[in-house]
Image (spheres, helix red, strand yellow):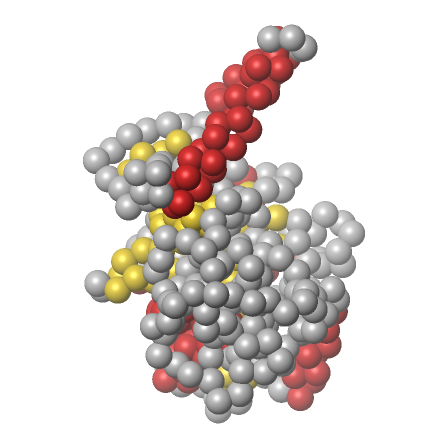
Length: 380
C-alpha cells in the first residue's frame, strides 16, 4: 500500500469512528435521547440525487470530488492557524508553477520547497437545502445562522443599499486585508504541506494579489479605488481587526467619498487530515469559489446598520451568480462584527480556501472585480 493510500485509510477510519462512536455509546447510555436528537436533525435535511450532483445533508458534492467521497465541512469563515515565530522548513523537489516572482518577499517568504501532509479534496459546492438556507430572487443563496426571521431577511435582501455611486474621479471603494498574509496552494496537487501555516508576507502570493485583481477591474470600469496593502496580522496575529479598523478609519478620514469597504480574505475549510479546494470552472478556467460574510448584531456589537450591509451583500451575491453561476457559496449571515460598523457598504469576502491555488484565487479576483463593478453601476 502506498503512503498516500495509507494516509487516506487513516483519515477514513478517523471519520468513521467520529460518526459511529455516538451510536455505539447509545447502546449503553441514553440511547433513546441520542437517536431521537439525530432523527430530529435528519428531519430538517433534504436529500436529493441528480445526474451531476449528490447532496448529503446540507453538503453538496459533484462528480469531481474524488472516489473517497469524504465529507465536506461547511466553513464558518475562520482562518487557518495563527502565525508562529518558529521557522518552517520543507523538503521536496516540487517547484511552484505560479509565474509571479516577488522581488521583496518580506519577513515570511512563500515556500519554494514542500513536504507532503494531509489530503487535498477538490470539490464544487452546489445548491444547499435546509432550514437555515434560502434562495435570493436574482441568484445565489443565504445561510442565516441568526435568530432573525427568514421572511424579514428575504424582504431586506430585495432592497437596494442606501449609498449611491457617483460619476467622479474620487475613490469610492476601499479594499483592505485584515489577515493580509493569508495565502494559497502553489498548484493543483493531492496533498497540502502540514509544516506550513499558509501565511506569507510575499504580496505576490497572499491575498493582496487578489485585491490587485479586483482593483484593476474596478478601475477599468471607471470606479476609483484605494487598495491598502498594510499588513495587519504579522508578526502578531492577535489584534488584527483592531489594527485594520485603524487603517480603514484613517483612509476614510482622508477620502470621505468612499462608500464601499471590502475586507478580502481567504477561507480555511479543513479537518485534521483533509483540506478542501472549492473551485468551479468558468470559461474553461478554474476559479476559487467565494463566500460573502455579512455580520449581524446581537445587541452587543454597536452595529445598528447591519441590515444595510446585508442589502449590499445580497445585491453583490446575485450579481456574481448572474455573471458566473456556481461561483459563490451562500452568504454567511451570522453574529460577526468584522469592522462592519464602519460603513453601510462594509463586507468581508472569502476568496477560496487555503486548499485553492494561487492561480484559481487570482482568476476569482478578476471575476469578482467585474461583478462588483456591475453591481455598483446599479447604484449610480
